[in-house]
Image 1 (cartoon, helix red, strand yellow):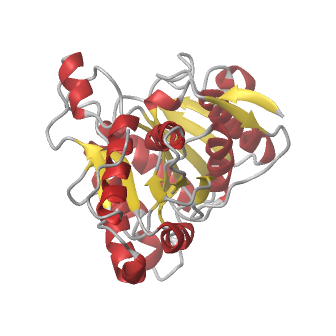
Image 2 (image 1 turned 180 degrees about the vertical axis):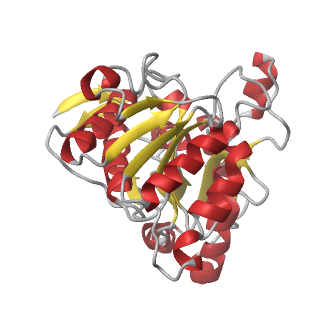
Length: 333
């Protein structure tokens, strides 16, 4: 099994699906001759030509609208929106068209569209560093995927391209250099299935996207103190698979939910609410959330670091829920 980067895993998924299905084509700003802002589509124009790798004008609304039309006519478009922040100008197309057409037309039309976009970011300031996945996961009719590893990125993107519904596929910008083992054979990771990334008995950490990597680092630090944390990667935010989370909560009785989005009305709020609804009697402590500070992200590097969550914040939250369990006695660090 080859060890490749997250970026290469996404590129492999696109290439393999384009080879498998002639209906699959790519569309977006600078994805052809430039190879994409994060070099994900580099080389695909030369291999597949301008009919299937299309550079577009700078108009996210036009890109999404053209993608919806192509999908409704039987093609399998994969459109790239340079960052999730730029998706804001095309939300009417996403929410009122892509997400709703299947229901509004009684199932006569489907929109098998994949919107690839990039979340997070560093030193890009308040309007270009956002994690807006809760906004998209709120919309019925959309599927929202946010993989954390190269293996999941490749398998989930292939599944998204083969799916009959519109899928927003979010790639965190800091994950592109992450390396991991990826099979060379064809495989898919099913949409809507959470994954246990590390087994543990003392506390459950639920995360998605980049924060899954931070959760795994936190789990290693906790293990050095004799605390075994179970790490669950949601992978898909809508539909949300709570099965592995609830199974874990029933064994550990303590939960920390980590995300880079803002805390209020975020993914962690949804996960905590469902745990409260379905596993309240198993909880020995309140569910804690670790999130970005609730402010527009500063440009200054020192302030940005203070605003963003990391593995140390997760460790602190885990120790806090464990302290409550043992009656307020301070946990050793």
